[in-house]
Image (cartoon, rainbow, N blue to C red; front, side):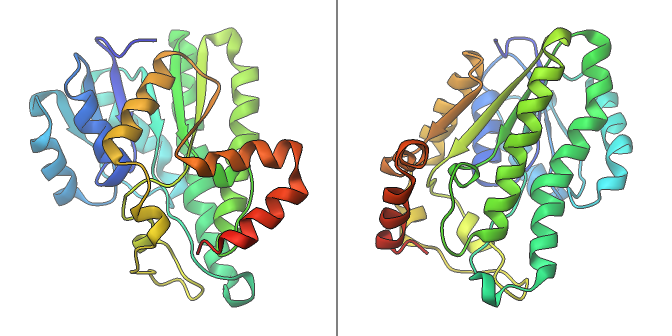
Length: 263
């Protein structure tokens, strides 16, 4: 896979990983569609790109799942086609199960899972028609194992793996590729923007996130994984070992996670 002469659509592009991908890809010979809920912030990202004339903006809310067909039509109208969809938009969580209102679990599923699935299903007919397409999904290592304070987030991320593994199988015949990207800790505002038990923002940075990979390093590794057409990739520091512990030594992982006291 190459990004040369491709149209790449990135959700969650106003900050963090999404912004980093936009800046990185703008240095290549491709066109970009950037999406998030915030027009003004997206415009700032667009101006920071190498060639703003090759960058279009499509503002929408992932939680508004009934609007996705219209959103896709608007995105397609910008450059006439889409070759790569990077599902990056989403929110995280920092609260114990006993302290978390069910409305927070619902919000996490609506944004992180249903919104991503609805957008993907809306663009799927376009990919099938042209018999090509690439879908990259930013999930999390929390989609492979769990950790306290992230129950709803883990549930939504686990669900993404189930859905997109099946999509890859069903549409291999249509030359549609899927890469699941599982970040560990990346130094973004994901913890600050995470929801707590009553649905408000956490507004606190945690040490593990702060000490995580830089956005630039993460994006470089992520884009390399896509060009190599990886099915699934884990990108982080020592925390990605948890994926393998879960597979082979689940009881040991349980003890390691509890001992880590990561919030």
